[in-house]
Length: 53
Length: 246
Image (cartoon, rainbow over all chains, first blue to last red):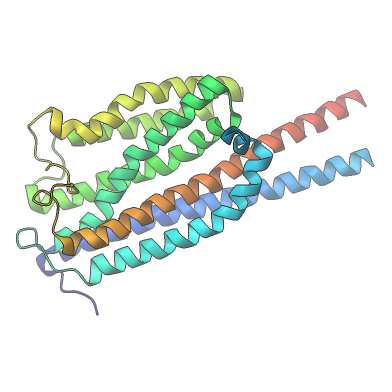
């Protein structure tokens, strides 16, 4: 299934590997930060509700 | 009915929440299809060999690096002229995505350039303007983080964005302005003779669509987080103030 990349296999695989790692990190960071902020917002909302009775 | 009402934070959260999963799914579909098609099912180039497969990452990421800055420019102008908070937050949300796209374009370009040009880097007009664009992304992100007052931060980063637009334009047209350097002209052209062959062009178009949708999905998700972060700060401030009153 793997295509024959010939003498440039290292270059092509490095380019694909580096890109996928960078895109993956960007997605992971976006999702992680989004979830963290959402949880903090919900928690702050609960605190305010408790305070106001 | 005005389109500006969709920039209202509450309405934005509503429609973006519905659109985001669709855009994310389409983005994943296009990216997987384009990359698998390009990597596994396209032939080698008669001169560049298998390195031509890097085109499916390099060209879309370079396009998005420039277009992300153009999007930030438009959002910054909207902020400066109409003071829509969501537009300032959308510009902020787009910057890290644009920065990663610029990094990918520079990295894949260097990896591609080494076997083809015999060097990783050359002070070519297009490469140099891309490097400066990357530095502008770093500066833009750092400026947002350095200023506490969100409106002042939005004002100053918008001005920085206007200045950086010169390099975004240069990155795109440098090869046309200065007829020197190693970098080739545009890979995609309406002129059939200049355009890359159809066998490379079609999967490239799918990859470009994937990168555009990927950018849109991430900017929507990150803008939603920025809006929630603003609400969180406001809520915490209210809680602190009520504690002070008691």
